[in-house]
Image (cartoon, rainbow, N blue to C red; front, side, top):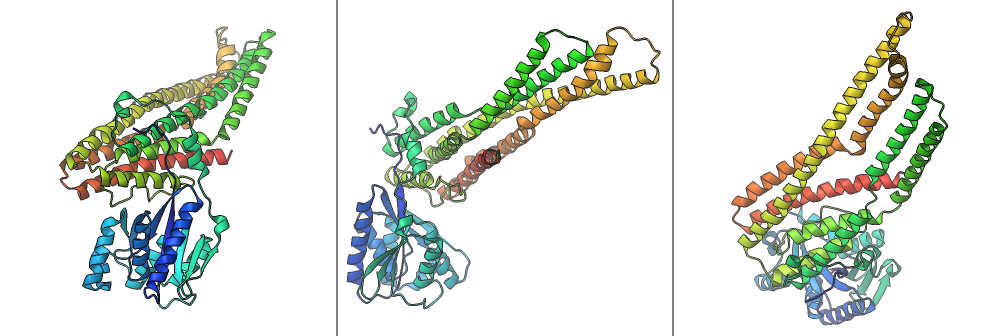
Length: 496
């Protein structure tokens, strides 16, 4: 059983080409050489991506499969509508090819036919690292033609391999922009591995075991590398408060002990050091990326063996994470095809481990945040009330200065209290904001409601399609929470 905790890197070669070819055999020979050269030039695994229009598209799909590439189909229209473009014999060949596809996606459900073909070509460009085009160099003969797709790829600066449809001459464009490898995934792969718990280490699926090992080490690295911003900010606030308290005590109680100014100085120096450490640690973005990778991988593990006609991660566009998302998607789909899980087995595992585990997590987070929020609110109102009372007492004293008060009242009520209590109230309010308690409590409650609804719905569904829709909504809600955290954290780091 593999001990690897690294994920493979996949690149995608997309395709666009004419429907009518003068020399199909010659084009097939050139395509085979082009795909073989791509595979030989780098140590990544290449995936093929194309539509299945008659002519070049079908030729490309067959060639990619013959040279051993994984192939994904992207259709401009739903199969029932797409079928209208083929004779019966041709459609049987299309169905055979679709049966060999690792994934079949549909770009448009209701667009105009020509618009759908254009959208399909643009989506191919959007999701590929290199575009191969069989093109005669002439303008498009209809909407969505190869010329338009090549022009779009050029506008994006996408690396191109253009095969002249007439002469079969091959030329490359923009290949200086092709990045072999990905430093983000390489950094995650390079993290030191750690031992899996015994109940996970016995997994018989090599792909899932590698993803489990990857997740375990990335999750540990993110946890160990988190800089604990709230603790540092709270420490800075507390040290400033202590320095203010010493200064207020000196004035209110007429204290002139030599240790007091030194104590105040040490508090201020400590606050500056804490702030400096905070700023330095904000420069470390690796733990943010590690946490994001850990949560995406957690979602992939939870949905492992799901027969995915829907890609769970496609709606999220996180810079630098695409190679990880692609690797998880490909490995998960290949595993589902090789070792399909039974419907009941997957559903029960998902309900127990993912939905149940996340409900426990959000309940625990709410139970931690809510008491703290209540205590800080009480602290704010109590200190604010005393501040108002002390200030009112001092104001009344200024109107009747002849009134004799007990000896402890002037230093405490007229001096120290009016200085410290407003600052203490502001400190309690700041801690609510620093710990993001209002949002955390509200978000935890919202997520618990969503997950409870997902659990109820998933309990009663009886088909893969219905279960997939429930899983998709639950995973998107969970990943949206991660996305919001990532956005806030990244913005805080970039705007320091």
